[in-house]
Amino acid sequence: DADVTQTPRNRITKTGKRIMLECSQTKGHDRMYWYRQDPGLGLQLIYYSFDVKDINKGEISDGYSVSRQAQAKFSLSLESAIPNQTALYFCATSDWGAGRNNEQFFGPGTRLTVL
Amino acid sequence: GQNIDQPTEMTATEGAIVQINCTYQTSGFNGLFWYQQHAGEAPTFLSYNVLDGLEEKGRFSSFLSRSKGYSYLLLKELQMKDSASYLCAARGEGTALIFGKGTTLSVSS
Image 1 (cartoon, each protein chain N blue to C red):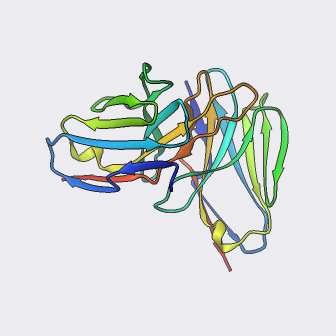
Image 2: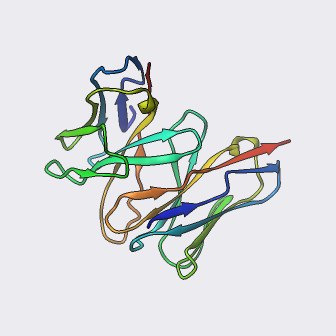
């Protein structure tokens, strides 16, 4: 089974609709992240969470909100979707410890299309 | 401000060696990462440098110069399956990564 899973994998919605993307992990990591990827723009950080009680804005948080329901779950919401939020969304997790690289592990991605 | 620069595209032939450069500017520095991403797939971790010098891992090596804000990824004995996007990412203060826009490498036979 995959260590980091995302649901749904694909979603088509209409402008103005509320959308929730979900991320679950079995790696036991405390730290979780949401990114969006647009062609030619690389990965941009939306929100991140260092533990259940911690939420931080990333580079492009406007129009998005998140909820860290448990150590293993981190969901991303678009309260009122707009077409320029059409993108590939990735969830990632990482451990944290001194002297380690603490690399991020990515989920398979959710392709969201807003019409 | 924080910024990562890397070339947009590179091409090479099977069996060759290619070097992908990356320059970075971050608030603080806690490591430089390289990820590989095939089209439509998730990025996967390739390498990590936090001290100056070369880290070698099979056909892939990564170099870091902190004083110059510079890193490169060296791919040897290129194979067709190495055709992918290569993402340079720097970790500044905290643990969030700043990613470059990626370098798309095309390997031809």
